[in-house]
Amino acid sequence: MQADFLDIENERLRDCARDLVSVMALPAMWVGQEPHHIAESFLDSIVEILDLDFAHLHLNDSSSDALLEVTRLSDWARNVAPRFAELLGSWTKADAHELPRRLDMGPHSLAVLSVPLGLLGEIGLLLVGSRKSDFPRQTESLVLSVAANQATIGLHAAWQLSEQKRVARELDKRVDARTRELAEANSELRRREFYFQLVVDTIPAIVWSAHADGRADFVNRHFREYVGLSTEEARDWVWTSAVHPGDLPGLIERWKATLSSGRPGEFQARLRRFDGEYRWFLFRANPLADADGNLKWFGACIDVHDWKQAQDELRDTQAELAHVTRVTTLGQLTASIAHELNQPLSGIITNASTCVRMLSAEQPNITGAQETARRTIRDANRATEVIARLRALFTKQDTAIETVDMNLATQEVIALASGELQRAQVILRTELSDGLPYVKGDRTQLQQVIMNLILNAVEAMEGISDRLKELLIATKYDEDDNVRIIIRDAGVGFDPATVEKLFHPFHTTKSHGMGIGLSVSRSIVENHQGRLWAENNDGPGATFLVAIPSELNDGRTAAQP
Figure 1 (cartoon, rainbow, N blue to C red):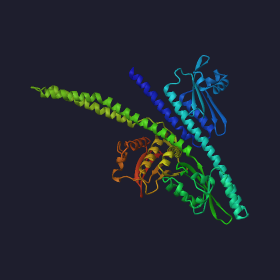
Figure 2: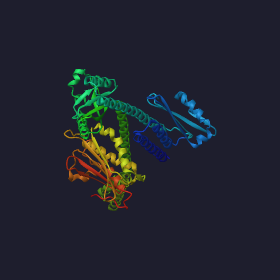
Figure 3: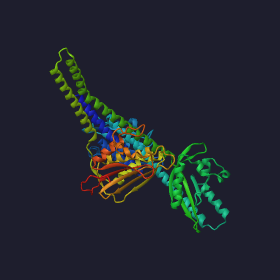
Figure 4: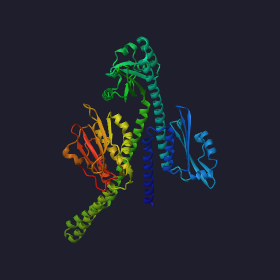
């Protein structure tokens, strides 16, 4: 009975873990989405995950004071509760602590739970209901809590992004309009410069201009006030002195590339405020040529520090969940090995001791010693079978086969890893082939492989200081009807003589590594009839390649070139 109870609890915990993984993946789906799309997607997801009869989201957009309400009802809820709209009105107006915990709905009762969105519920209120008698269980409450937190982060980021886009568009319009006015004006030069400076100084954002070669030409009053410069000091000021030293090399590289292209550019870096604090800004640069063809650059810097902090908090939460999962898995593995091997090992010890006593007697019992030796061999074979069984358990698992667009799957992983790439100051370059055929496989497992390879590449470049930390992520369709994923870093590379050891379990070249990431990744790829291998670059770093048979492949296993 205890074993049945443990099986039930383990199944419940596994379901909870899967639900948490699904919930934690929601923000990746919401990148660039509007708040109402996020709200609808959020309700659809939690209703499906927790099998709810009722879910209602009441949001208050602080940026526009607009109310947003979204409701999901099951067929049962619509049939037995014609007054649901009236009930919803009374619930959303009531204090969350005053809501009834269970509502009588004829032959059934509805368990009701409220979850505030935001630290003090400032984002809104989530109301859910279920006919299940034990709702909400502890695991359901945990999933709802994490989901509410993810929705809060996603909505807050969406509102901030919408506001940033609006401000950026407005700034672009104002700067372009004023610039065109100045370029077309035939009035006296001093008046034109004064008028331009007056206009730009009134814009509540950092605005600047630069010569065609990138030298700073003008910064507005808001910029001067931010860095703590007077008008006189700003004339001889070098703008790079305000950039965080860790961001300066990458910013200069991107700025040079933008100057060379002659096209608008966008990049992020930290700027030092007059009090010494660094804050993240989004730099946007636009070129403008006058009637004589002389090029000049105009741009704006938008404060995105709070948005970056929200992204960092999300990354920390994801990292903590991954850490808990790894520790739990390792604990389960250790407990399984100890439990399974304890009995045959005990038998081996007992039989060996008995055999020694029989042979050490004044008249050795040869027959008995032979029997105990046979029992020792039997128990040793049992131990070997246990190890083989455990190995099969942890290297083979059922996969959820579906049609996977590897370009889209790769882009989703890049979105999840973008915060880590920025933190490590990695310059990302993508080359995703158009018209890439689909593959058949487990989307989550394939994305796990890509994530492992990206994080390995970031760690391989961790100590690099004499060159740019460049990371290439590419996809291509090869001549064998395979879809390839290519991860190329500029790190330290590896010893060609030990290349295969990279994929051995518990082999690691990192002082804090466990040596299981590449081993698990290769197992996943091989379960998809694919290949995973590594090559040193001609220059610095290494390239890891994955080949997965596409839908056009006639069943052949992907071959290494």
